[in-house]
Image (tube, rainbow, N blue to C red; front, side, top):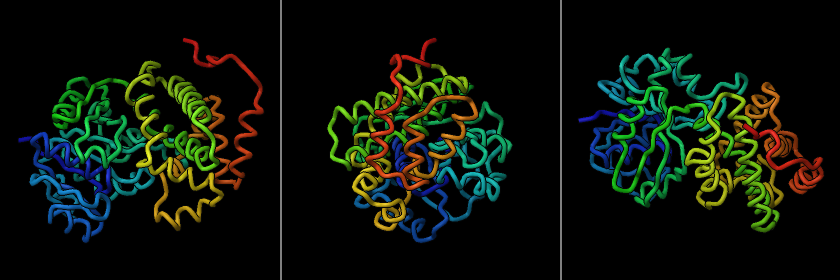
Length: 336
């Protein structure tokens, strides 16, 4: 039987643990909070996925070494900006031959490292053992077994296929790719674009507006990804436009919802106080902009989201700035 460890007891980590268990794996989750661990061992995770019963094959522990023992696949689902500190504490417990699966969608503040780069650097895991899962992954829909598909990315084809086999179920279809960079950039930047779409929704703007932001957001995501060595076609797939659509349009998306509140005139601090959480795009937008500038890539939507989140720019001013930019050819910067 496949043995999997999942580090992180949030909604997406719990949803992926559910997929693994549904596919027949023996799953141990690691969590920092004993109360959540106790809930999981009782068959639920009311803190993040209320009213959902977990499969029988999932247990949890607060002991990181116990979680990793004998694991074929170690799944990392902690907040992206905490990854380095977490790996510094328990990265040494990861078995030397295990696949290390990243569910995280962000770019590290300060270093502009992608999550796979943090894993290889801090946990000293070879790049060919690092696997990235990305796509339209709204956790609530996954645990309710709505049909969905995602991308499993690894430079080692065989390892990608092994992880895909471990999470494939009757309602979840994983595809494989070797484009780790593309999968990670698509997953990170879409959160920022979803904030922008949410802002437009909060301003009561129409579907034309939101479709425009999504499409131009895909363009700047592709420009950045290609500049970093990604394959352009990745952004036309599940890790690109698929994830972008789900995150930008679903009311289940935390980034979109956070943006809606910003568009209604709330400050970042006010939104955090009401929702008691910070969306990933809020955390990563500054590092994504820094990464783009380091590679001389134009990312105007990301730039304006950073102005709102970090510099207090009014939401309506964002629209005026974007529409006031110099006109250009639609495919400028995207030509092969």
